[in-house]
Image (cartoon, rainbow, N blue to C red; front, side, top):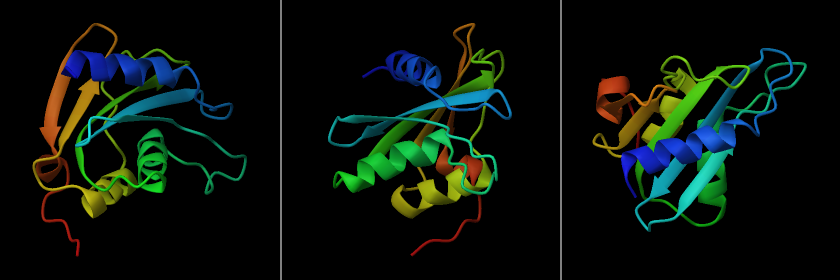
Length: 131
C-alpha cells in the first residue's frame, strides 16, 4: 500500500468522526505488518476525558483482533472535516504507539492539498520509555 493510499483511507474515515463539541474531526489508517489496515476516527464525549483519538481507536481495533506488529499509520484531521493543515498525534497517542511500535515506525501526516509529511516514532517521541 502506498503512502498516498493510506492517507486517503484516513481522510475517508475522518468523515465518520463524532466531534460535536470541538468540530475537529480526525481519521487514522493503521497498516499492520500483516498487510491489514485498521481504521479509526475520534469520538468525543460531553465530559471530555472519555474522548478517544482516531489513532488509539485504530490501535484498539487492531490489538483486539490479535495484531501486535505495525508498520505505518496515516493521520489527517481538521475543523469540520477539512484537513487544511497537518495533524500530528497527541502525546497519549504517541505513547500508545510506543507500546507496540519500534523507533522506525512510520507516521504519515496528510493534508487536503496532497502534501504528506513522514516521521518516525523516534522523531515524534524522543527519549521515550517502554518495556
